[in-house]
Amino acid sequence: QMQLVESGGGLVQAGGSLRLSCAASGRTFSDYAMGWFRQAPGKEREFIAGNNWSGAVTYYPTSVKGRFTISRDNAKNTAYLQMNSLKPEDTAVYYCAARYGGMKVYTMRTEYTNWGQGTQVTVSS
Image (cartoon, rainbow, N blue to C red):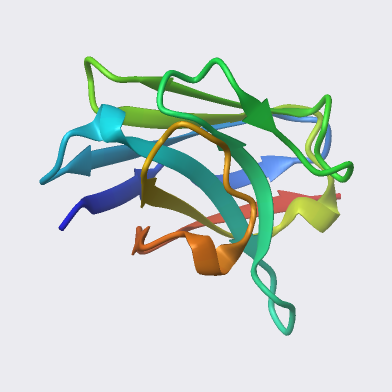
């Protein structure tokens, strides 16, 4: 079983930046595709970024494309989410997720089998 631990959340002003980290353990990190999701109060958990095992293939929904960047360091067993130009509507709990079989990017919540505990991101106006 792969364990995932997010860090890097916090309070930031609109227009600012944050970098989230997701430390993985328990399995061979490079065997897994990675994804980032977020969930605001009263809303469904939504996909916001994903990459394949090497990080060479990425995918973003329109809501964050051009502002968020997913990356990974397989030597450090860590995935990252760089978030720039943050908006108040980006406020949510952010989760990283992993899926064995890392050749492609997965975008559906149900496709991921391992989840972190989440980290709060709050963007003030």
